[in-house]
Image (tube, rainbow, N blue to C red; front, side, top):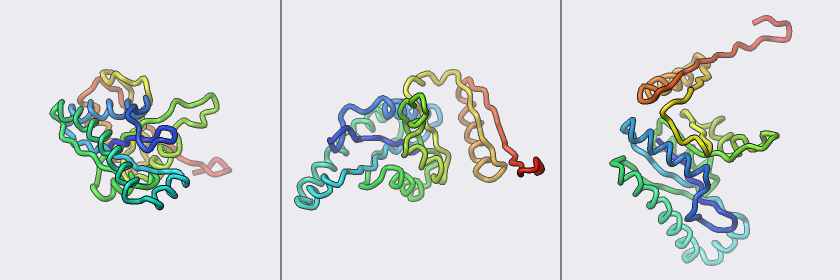
Length: 201
């Protein structure tokens, strides 16, 4: 399981205090890792602003080492939480857009599932998943679990599987069934058949 960790906080390179959305993703991954015996990879894509890129270019050796050290410190702290529960885990990071780096990581290590947190959406729904979540849902070559703050109890929950009746849909359905065996879940499967303008298939 690849767990996305958002280290950004304002103008800082990495945050010791993670957002509620990221904390929720970590918490859910620990529950799944413990229940399924899965290996967790806590991963951060470090994307800095243009001004910071200029600073890094001017003093690349010192500043990049500082950024990397801060990222490693936070990720190692998260990994220790998994270690304390007997969950196999590792931490990794790379520089670049978070969603792009996460997809590269999925391809490199052939992850089965990605878990990320999302911000609470506004009344207009503009931040329902955020840029990272939306990109991963569209382009990741594996199922993506986008969780949100407040979902702390996995003892009872509903799973909705959007099945396209293809290989990806089958993979999602298999994962929902396998994972659901460890919790009190209800699994719903939906398939949409598109019609043309005349109402015919």
